[in-house]
Image (cartoon, rainbow, N blue to C red; front, side):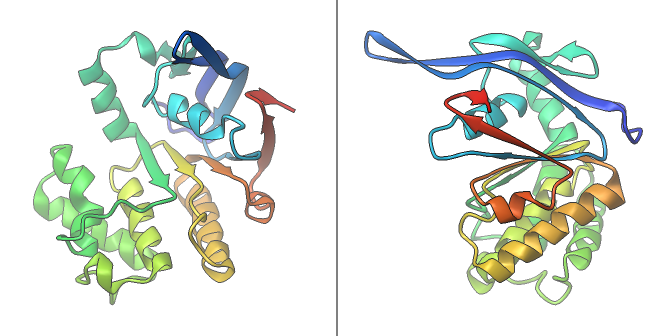
Length: 228
């Protein structure tokens, strides 16, 4: 993927997604189009059930669309096999979810380093990268702590460090402040926007928090699987 500032990172064209419920079909996404460039931050807002998370998972290649295509670097990624898609996700996309999904048996630095180790980076290099990112997150004194020893805001910062460890071109965040108080939400917003500026990555965050969304360079509203 091209990491040049301003270069097109992804294009989603006419994304539709339906789910079977017995003999019925539920249309969740109804023909969404989207283009995002490197160095651009986009917040997708809308109420519960609007289809935000389903769309984000499709952009992140976690769920194929029923119709439509997602292009990265001009290639329709859903024409690839599972192994190729998994490799692409590991090397190019960073995910942050509402729940941090840290492994309780590993320290903060080990949790942050895991995707790099899985991706074939040497353990020394992976831990060096993790150390540098956690330092930027203000967690230099918490690297050897386990998730149970960290606050909710600290756990989410570790999750963000984990998302950055492979130096992705795009960060995808699903309700990243959903379990945080106002102060921690403000801190996470600031960290995200610093990441975009410093690393020239793309950022897409799904949220119902309009205040969190206002710091982004672009906001799109979704209702019933469509832009409004």
